[in-house]
Length: 447
RNA sequence: GCCGGGGUGGCCGAGCGGUCUAAGGCGGCGGGCUGCAGACCCGUUAUUCCCGGGUUCGAAUCCCGGCCCCGGCUCCA
Image 1: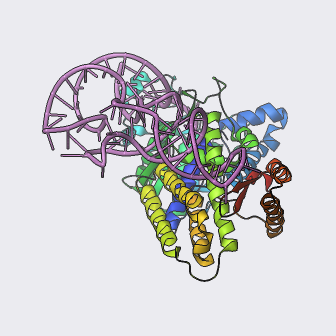
Image 2: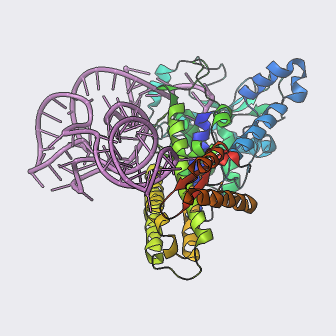
């Protein structure tokens, strides 16, 4: 998985979390294409003669990696994760229907192609002109196709490859069909939302729509389509030939998943994102500010009184304003960038104003506000590492109290030694006129 | 060639007809925080939104022309 895939998954995660925040019951289906050319090629490379017996290890590995990355990026689990190899029967049935109704035909080699000319608006969705497509087709059509734009629903068996039996011979399903069959099985048609990277618009999504029209008689496969802008590197699309692919695994060695999520969130999902480590570094920095505000709230929560405070009202109304503006931004075509800036300005309120009046707010008010702050952050995939173990908190507070006494006694050299030691350990203290606040480097905490 | 998406400060990136002398972040600079520090705070950092026309009382935002970049048309998130 590279940084482009991760952007798409991250965006959909935020989208789903937003819908759930709004109280909607969301069913999310993420398909796994666990057999295709790429996988088989890989298997051939790795296993050679043993390929037929072991090819499935490849998708298994990819899927494991996928879940590992989702975990690190705080991407919530989908409701269903259908795999192609577990839905072969459904696909065969779909193909039979399509052939029966004349939307598809069996080629001499046993492949089955979808006949694009049977769909009147074919090309409209992606804004492609069929005639020009044919004229500009760069790849010579496969022998059994009636029309170069026809696409495979079923690929006939080739020596060495795994296969499934069908009325028209052995083979395996084609990509465009898989998604339609699996998604509609778990969600019904039309889907409310469907999408992916912008590069899937044509031919993949166009073909999906064609299949859905033919198979289910619907106007469109989905009510709403979402296409996430592509990620580029130094202005160019990531590709194997340019050798500029940035795997998420590499990024996560140096940076937290949260920093990457924040980085993604700072650009609107439809815009292209030119990936850079400098940008990611900025996000990392930004994230620290967000965490500092959180930790100060946590500190206030611990020390605040149970009685209502005179500034409770102000605090609560600030929080309400945050929630309202934050959600408003997301409701405007999921403007995560604006949402981040709302969160940031609230964080600034905390670190510039609130922390100077600890005696004027109540525990309950601070806690409620902190919870909201976290909850909103989590829609964006950040602020997941908010808990600090109690024993560690007590330990740090004890050290800080001791240091404060040293400062009162003006024994600054020892106080400074303590501070620099804490800094080394990833604990950052800030002295203010009312008290000393601290925050901790999340990478120092194991979750 | 055909079809899309873009070009906003030192950088990243919002804004998409008035509230824009353009959000927010990062960086820089100046100052504050009754020592110092700072993953703290405050102030400051684009009279200007690729260029040229036009529409409008009013444009970064709409229209026309040009330049440049990226992507799709082939597996691709």
